[in-house]
Image (tube, rainbow, N blue to C red; front, side):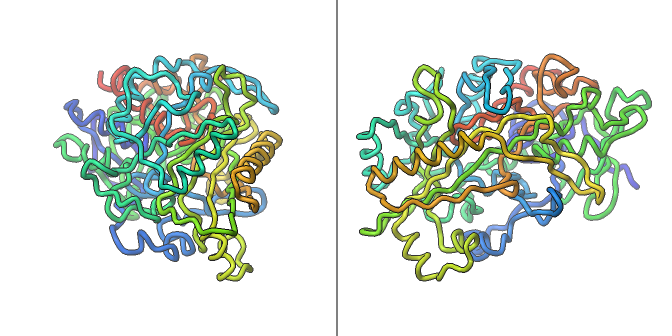
Length: 504
């Protein structure tokens, strides 16, 4: 084992949290080292190949996780930029009500230790850094903002504009989604069919790699080590300070010494890293005196909805521009929180046949040519028994049963009725399970009480002097507005960079 690497600040992971934090630190003068388990993804024709990306899963991580009596391959992407490389590009703020305590069917969605006002200036900065395009005036559930979007929203194509008008006629409030794509203003985005769920061949998706990591690496004080899997965090004898990260780099185990460490490996892998770092001083896992590391695992309850008008084809190419929050919050915030709906990229033959391989390709092609496609998302309740543990094989093990199913089923019924009224008589739905885990969250929740949380409000571990974390694991609740937690993670990373002791 060698000790060839060291840095003032070591960041484990280059997704929304780690990437944004590196960007925020690039002019600080601190020596920053990013550790990434994967590598840069290539720009190649397969980026936009449905066969390669959808059917073969070319860019997904081959990392089986345990669940129940078996294993599954989830939505993970181990690469520079992390999960944001294949995300749909929607980046929305949480609503102020999302940070309040409220009752769900299965338990309490707890209050956050910070307010929307604490995050709001960092939301503004994150929208600027990530190049988010939005409107901010069409959705009555839009939270207050101190500055408008820096770029106009991606416009609807004609068929989607027509749909929006039909939804407004039902008393609903469709709005243009806030999107992280470099479209317009001379940007490279082609607004093509292969965006949502695909790797961008022309680097036009505003992901953590393009918007944060690459600009950060232009600084002489920021370095990146790829193909570096963080196996354990080591501490001093009394367990109060992290002294090094044991990292397997291209198969060789090395020790990276660090003044401060920030874990940003994702809602499952960050918790697993701390659990693997158990020691005499931390027998239940690092930073786990509260027994909360790995607990309160959440992933949204998701259903894909395909609405078909057999009388005419849908010529839309870039479909992911419209959202609906009427089933989530009312204007006064007193809605039963069924969840949100957002258009997806166009469903392809490969998507449908991946779920229903027995369907004739010609029939599936006929359906997808005539469909408008939605993603329906309901909040998962943070329950302590839903958790990440280490399996007997050493793999990550997810102990999870979905909550919120009655509310989610009502959301699906409402959305189906909405589309039938809009002129789409045939509606097909498919609910997804544990393997659709792109928005895994909650396993290192932050809070003011060290007995009930892992991190303090500025992301530092209660139990250690020099350990922070910023990814979806810090979320006490996950909300259900379109876009998931990506923008909130980025905002918290900026807040930590400015307000915490990370640079002191």
